[in-house]
Image 1 (cartoon, rainbow over the protein chains, first blue to last red):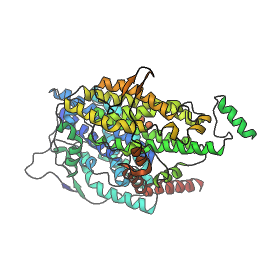
Image 2: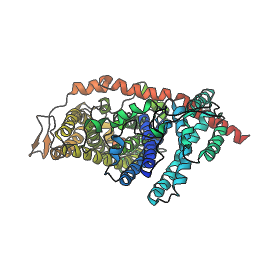
Image 3: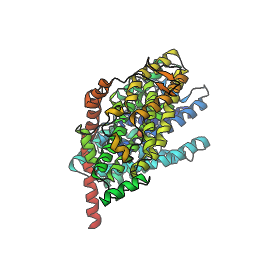
Image 4: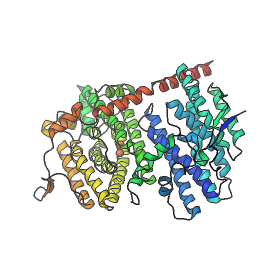
Amino acid sequence: MTLVSRAPQGTPPPDPGDKFTMLLAHADDNMVLSQRLGELISNAPELEIDIAVGNISLDHLGVARALYTYAGEVEGEGHSEDQLAMFRNERDFTNLLLVEQPNGDFAHTIVRQFLFDAYQAELWSDLAHSDDEQLAGMAARAAKENAYHLRFSAGWLVRLGDGTYESHHRAQLALDELWQYTAELFEGNEYREAWESAVGSTLSEATLDVPDDPYQRTGGRSGFHTEHLGLLLAEMQWMQRSYPGLEW
Amino acid sequence: MANEERFQQIVDAEEKIEPTDWMPEGYRKTLIRQIAQHAHSEVIGMQPEGNWITRAPSLHRKAILIAKVQDEAGHGLYLYSAAETLGVNRDELQELLHQGKHKYSSIFNYPTLNWADIGAIGWLVDGAAITNQVMLTRCSYGPYSRAMVRICKEESFHQRQGYELLIRLCQGTPEQKAMAQDALNRWWWPSLMMFGPHDSDSTHTEQSMAWKIKRVSNDDLRQQFVDMTVPQANYLGISIPDPDLRWNADRGHYDFGDIDWDEFWRVVKGNGPMNRERVAHKVKAWEDGAWVREAATAYASKKRARTAA
Ligand SMILES: [Fe+2]
Ligand SMILES: [Fe+2]
């Protein structure tokens, strides 16, 4: 049994999704997560992790840019990647709630990354078979990068879970807190079963418990976000909004 | 004495000293200090640039900036490894940095206050670093000279990207050009300071020259940098904040004004605008990460025990 908290009565339901909407949603996921990881660079526990976090941030940014650009073409209104990223507001972003959550301690960063990487593993292998060749090509490239991200996040999750008493506790706490954003990953797709089995086996290797809290929060895909996203966008969009229409 | 003679012969013959070769204690110490300081500079340098990652004005610029900061982290790693060939380890060197016993390039004790600063750092700071480092690719110590060959390639890439960022601003609106001018005003003199004290006041120069760690003097390097950079500023159409700057046809070089040595020493001694914040930031990241590193160590030893069992 799950208790799902959705957008409130009175708000329109999520758009069932034309291609433009779908591309934007995935672009926003990658954009927002890249932005979060970008905050971390120079704050990591060691240099190797700074480099890895930079890499992963850059990969997500690359995916976001490709998807925004393609979304702009599909929409046909001449919107560039920057216009789509910088001139839509909080309510227009349709990223998952999971990716907008703050970095927290390293356990939160890793759990967020792991849950999302496991989801993107399913997403990209699905989209790589899309009839849309352009999208399929992007998905195939993203799948390769994602395999590396997943190795990193799962590897660290196991180290933290099966490391010290403190790291185990922190990892479990992060998992318990972020679990409420996972039901949303499976709205409108069939990824849950494969995801649960992949996540379950890493968690068991990490000696971590699958949370049993039934509460789940959704709404990202209809722009009903947590309060964290607005601030993230304010920072990210600040220059374009302050100096509209300039070339950088 | 035979050791010392053979060592100097290798150096004089322009061959490389390798980690297992005999070397004078002073040579080893000088190299450790210099390579560690260089590594620390790469790592501390991530902060002023990292400051703009989340605010970069376009996704293209954001990608370039993340990649650059990541390169600098890689340079840090690479240089710490070069230092480790001399019998120290990264953790102890970082500890010295955290305790304020090791220095890093003073340029990073200035804040990045507008977007053009990211361009100015690439153009001027990476530019000054290259001027220094081209000489170091021929350094007598093998691991350091090889590290420098690789790093120099990436630094010249950074320099071009920084300059290109400024070209864009200078060809943009008056507001954008003003950003570039403001950045040049603030970064010009600190960049000249990157070459260190005048040769007459430099304590290490002579010995380092004999050991071929250093090959060109501070003042000569600074002159090279000025000569290279002035025409680039002219092309941008922004002015260098030095009323004494002018071409000297007799010397075939630009003359330039005097560095404010009080400011130089104040920053070197830890009292620049950002010294405390830079070190505090680094220490905080390190301390916040202690439990993570402990977890990795604990996990690795559990895993070893399990495979042994
Ligand atoms: Fe560097
Ligand atoms: Fe650089």
